[in-house]
Length: 136
Image (cartoon, rainbow, N blue to C red; front, top):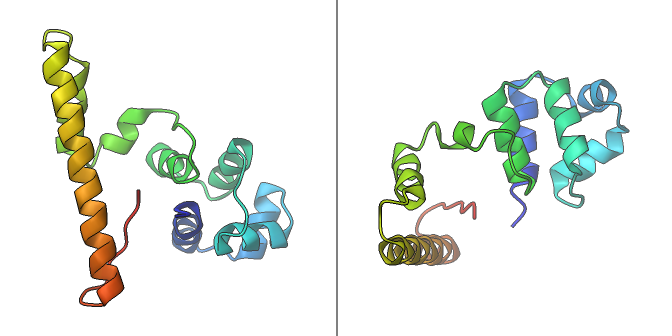
């Protein structure tokens, strides 16, 4: 699933820029931004950084845009800022005082929870009982 297209569109809308103005400010052709937003093209890391700069995004939004495009953000902490549970889990998994076997078990449980949540969300989305968007 292409997470970048809707993320770019939302950030461009929040920046109150048209596709043409964003393309011009970032040094791209209008058709390139259009293809990015339609999901028919994926950007390079450099292109994401140029788009973020053209929209005057803060560090958190820039890192979110990078992550949506499949790139490592400048600072992983900025992605976890709004997710205290994930931040705590990451801290736990990096704690060498916790036995490796326990950390592996926790990783496996988290992976299972994510897969189950994805399946549930896709099932809900297919049968139409609720609107659902899954980003993973």
